[in-house]
Image 1: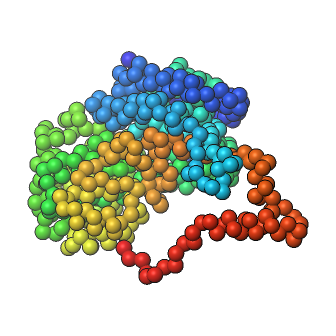
Image 2 (image 1 turned 90 degrees about the vertical axis):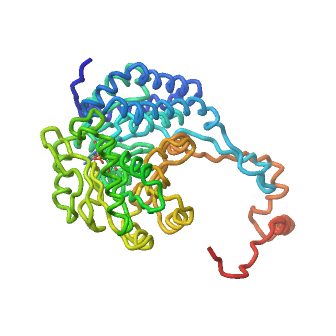
Image 3 (image 1 turned 135 degrees about the vertical axis):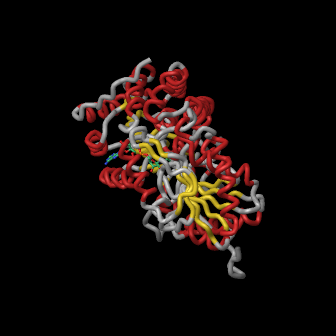
Length: 485
Ligand code: NAD
């Protein structure tokens, strides 16, 4: 097997690709459920018939262990595709709103319609999952789509450019490869929805470009995801799950725990438990381990190393780096303050903030942007409830990290600066679907609604009927007391 050379799409071809997709979409062929299922089956085959090549490309780009390739990308993607395949007919079925005396005669209906030609932009860190999971939703919803994977994962992006035309309908789905110039061209064009997964800096560029065309955008971004550590946790399980979330993919995960909040008098116990766990994960050190990834590019390596060099905290474990191998050792740093360079880093470094109380920990979190994920390690339901009730975040996991992304039926998404809109399963389908409301009003309804036509003075009787009709429905009662929580 060989890694394919990465080539960018010629800029002048990009508008032609979009126009061709628009023409194909207008034929209406993507609307039939049979077509959507056929393309979802083809997407499944694209993955299952190329697993060794996908693993190889992920290893080339990210030094990704094969187990992680399967566990974090290939398997969750196959689950997403299967779910969309199994449920597409149900999801796409027109819905009736709740029965209403006023409206039932007009047959009010919600049609689930594709938005049109959509754009999926994906990041480097989970290139397969974050390119094709949105695509599964776009196909299920009946759209045509351009996918723009990251130039920072060139082996994967090149593989996608080869496989997509081999398996999927080339009139409807297309990969465009490239960096800033190509993406700038893409963003000049009008799309019917943009599904962007990436960082806040680029999200601002995407949103500004989308605003010119009034294009709706889903933004799946990152954030400073905290972990609350209650001494009343199962410490062994806590450090295993927390540090797995921190070191997997060398910390390059949008919802990796960014920093932990630990009571002052528990820091030493917590650090010792973390050290034991890291030694269990990497008995001969992470550098020699087949189970540890690398930082994606030299410039990202330099950025993470710069953050580590700039910390005001003290390294108590790890800290070694190798620029040539883009290796950063899993590292624990104590004495970190909430404004430290390390608070949002996208690397395998765990900053530990010591706090006097749970209230102080909550204050630290609330002084930052709303995180994408928030983690609580505790066996105490009152502790968990207090954190949940007094913070905001895109998602929450108690006594776990990250795997809630795959929990079937749960929406995944940020809030505020960590993103807007939702992903996975039906939520991705919904992002690409327009809810088109329809009514069909028979003539006899004018026996009741005829009073709306001018001149208003001559037919008082229907107007009176309308007034009487509205009285059928009870008024909202007055407040008797101020609401309490
Ligand atoms: P990024 O924002 O740099 O890149 C995302 C996409 O934008 C890529 O396709 C890239 O080619 C394109 N891009 C880059 N610069 C651009 C520019 N100037 N103009 C137009 N397009 C441009 O993200 P990344 O570094 O590849 O990925 C890491 C980021 O993604 C992190 O911030 C992480 O938190 C976030 N992320 C979020 C999720 C989620 O589901 N919420 C998942 C994974 C990653």
